[in-house]
View 1 (cartoon, rainbow, N blue to C red):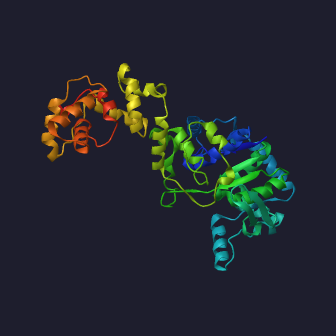
View 2 (cartoon, one colour):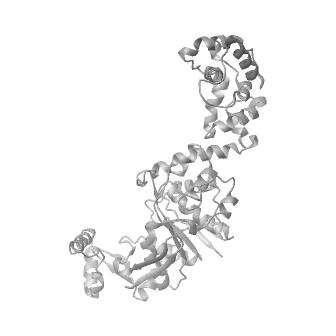
Length: 441
């Protein structure tokens, strides 16, 4: 059975970059009838916060990305310790004691010599006595996984054939000096134990994948299918790293972005398939193909979400939004008409408030100097309310006869006088909602 996972660290609010990873793994699992696991990477007790766990669950539920079960890495520390012992027994795990300053000096020396800045494995040359002496001086060291010096190859679901020379990669640190287990080994052990068959993550993890493949093989596990999606950039190709805090899912939700608008974009962004609004999750699932995605950096512009949100809202019946309408104070007898007229003129549900204020209180008229006399004559001919769907046609016909104005010279000055805007709903439909006309005064 296909099993995928989304493994966020609860150290902040998840953003669009996280969503891309979560959605791809979710769609793969659902398309094959498999299992989607939410795995909380909370091995860092200082930075991991329960409030972020609650927040990321709320974000995923808002989007409809429902997980089959939750796993927490903080509850599996014994299992990681067992895996570390197994690596020690087969000679693939060793303790190293260099300080950050010493490692930095080694890297600089290697770079000056034109060599890759790879850890030199000096710790492997230490004898037991020397190791005990330095441990007494400095305390515990870090634990590194000893890579086999060979090429690591796999067929990536997005990038195609990948081949990395492990000699160009430092032996990764798996356990810090303070004993904290790091992502690299925790993820490997979890993927093995939980039967993860497919892993989709960002292209910044390609080197991690190479080392993890060797770790999985050393521990006797089955290597999953890996796919590495491109990283998001801004609309001009700029890095999003400094802006991701402003692109948190909770902020997009509060701005009025609709879930299907966001999902429709993220399920196709960076692929050869066009971005088209989908009305439900089943449509996204059936059309998803991981091999349609490319390796080039993918431009993301959050402003593109608003037109998609507007299109989605246009499809909604009154029953889906009636609570939002009533909350504005729209009378029950007028509420459904208000929605049917306004839904084509909004990008988010929040836009409804200004339209209702216009209907209820009237708009400040916009009257060009050359139109003042014409508008004044027209207002005299405007019948008393309440208005109906026939009012606009009857009124403009009378105004045309009285003034001789026609076409745009007739309709645009009257629209601006009534609504204060040059665009908006069809005026025949809008008039029954208009309760106050300030241009009369």
